[in-house]
Image 1 (tube, rainbow, N blue to C red):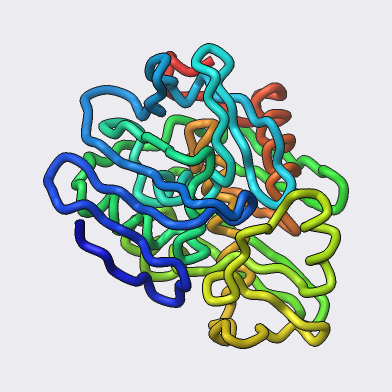
Image 2 (image 1 turned 90 degrees about the vertical axis):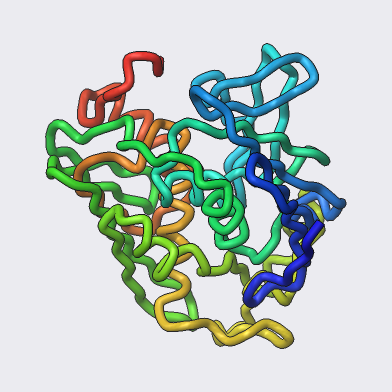
Length: 290
């Protein structure tokens, strides 16, 4: 095994040396226990490996989407916490086949607090890239609480995110669907939360493995507490865009078309995309998906 420390990360990620499989190991953000994700080249769709057989993405159901996303596959009794950054790496690199995923410990590792560790592993595996499997076919807007999603048809992928947080102010980030641009501009953006939220999160069984080296823990003024590195320009909006890519991936995205998201969140995005599909704003280009 080759062990390397990811940029701006407290967890060490172990990357197996070989042409067919790579592993990222670390600690789970919410469970706080050791866990790992192994990527293996395979023919066919992206699947999760389990002792009861492979589970395709189309079989996954979202069990919860508060401060992260947990998915389950009833047929194989699969339950995986914190899939959002893993899915962001797959969506950002436009990987829709050719890899099997084996998660140990019930959670995807926090790693660098973003998607860069998974991007590196998938890139080293040299998995073929493919076009997105969903497309925006008509204009529409969907509101979910304070979140708003505007969909417009276009020839290419285009995501735009606008956010505003206390002490941080307003930020925007955009992405044109290019894999190199995702790695350069988005994949490194760390997850974050305010110190004042810690007690409630821990009481709810969340964020038990938060690492201040990998997660941006913010004080009341919106500054990153030591030992975390200061936020890079636009990092909060970039991370929300990263999350948006990951949430779209479960539906076969990111979609071909333009999405403008204001104050997006995991739960809101999943509800908005499901509504967009039901209302015919977004359609699947893969007949195998339900």
